[in-house]
Image 1 (cartoon, rainbow, N blue to C red):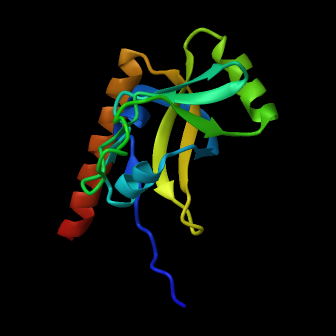
Image 2 (image 1 turned 60 degrees about the horizontal axis):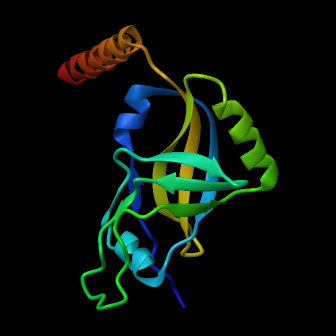
Length: 153
């Protein structure tokens, strides 16, 4: 029986602009029945989300998964905190790193893997300063101009 390839990839585009990624992890995410259906429909957003450690568990806060259209009274709350599934060793390391000022954990990509499970790529990152952001914009603009010049010839 052939399975359909899932192309669901919900990105946090602003994260790469605001932060410098130091280390990345892939975490499972604990969802209810209608949440996974909404993600498969592409109705999720990672804008203004972050992760934190509480009682030895990793949680994601602010992730918006829209209520499922066909869900009735058992629909989920859109912006609840959701538990992430990581090894204790990884959680301990991330908790130690985030104690340093300027470091945080930000979700970068929400996707469905080959087994049909929702996964979340998270990154340990450091906030960029204003001049770093300007430099990133300049590099992006220069790259775009070079591509335009190549297409012209």
